[in-house]
Image (cartoon, rainbow, N blue to C red; front, side):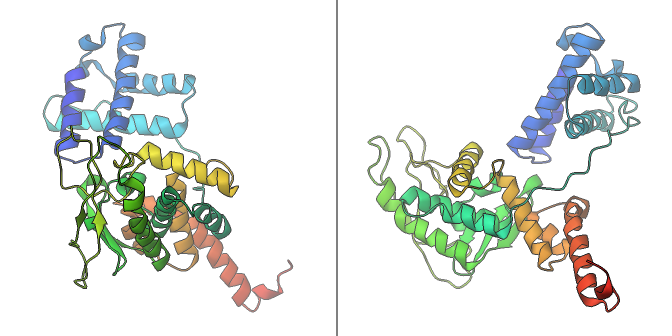
Amino acid sequence: MLALIDDFLEYLELERNLSPHTLRAYRGDLDRFTTFLARDYFNLRPEDVRPESVEPATVRAFLAAMTRDGLKKQSQARALSAVKSLFRFACLNQLLPANPASSVRTPKQEKTLPRHLRPGEVESLIESASGQPLETRDRALLELLYATGLRVGELVSLDWPDLDLNARVLRVMGKGGKERMVPFGNPAAEALKAWLQDWDGWFSGRNDDVQTPRHNQSSAINSKGTTAKRPIAKRPTRRAQTDEEPVFLNHRGTRLSDRDVRRIIDQRAATAGVPPGVHPHTLRHTFATHLLEEGADLRTIQELLGHSSLATTQRYTHVEIERMLRIYRESHPRAKLDPV
């Protein structure tokens, strides 16, 4: 089983080009499954568990164990999906004659609406970052998240050549190695330009073991042929130089991590007085919800978000239904007579 999992994860990384975050999620779910098989079901050492010993009843017992452990239905469904994918991989490689998890039904999940911020809350969140250089960075980060609906991993992976500030469009590599172009508005462009101006003054000479930043005058996707200075992150001399030019950097002059972005948003939400629980994905949901409220169609939102399936985007249809009902009640002559 352990060897099968290693081969499967290598396939996901090299052939499917899944992100490190997704690979960690698969690893965690499959480790949980292996631990259950070895400790609770077969009473064996993990290295002695064999894939051909797993039956549909085994997988159902795994679901029951997760329920006893208090895992949410969503977590159970994700773990079951990982197990099904693992055995599907084994069947495709002729390691098993049949998938023992294929007949196991996915736990029915509670339908919850994605949380999103109201326009006033978004404004308060963005306006909380102004003044100091790192606050200029935070404002640019918040403006870009709300303007584009990027995943946090996509945001922190951005390099300056990926952005065209004049055309107000960026290029990002999404899940599965799929590249897409995403536009953004003038407020985000102006916030990014302000961050560029502050970059040198803040980072120059901050650390003795860090190189002085240089500038690159070229623009990789500038459709108008204009140029703009872009800083290249200062790196400790012990690291090899690369051609990366991270857009968002921490106080040490290195690329922000996913955790850094979550910490920044927590701080800004507290400063703005926004209710707790705001995450990078909250701004992604807010981006999609506000577009739909203003009349954007689901297919366009799907392309902007980088969803491979329209079904993923359809979680936002509750907003479309509410808008449809509101328009009907405001427009239809007989509906206007309905009591309030």
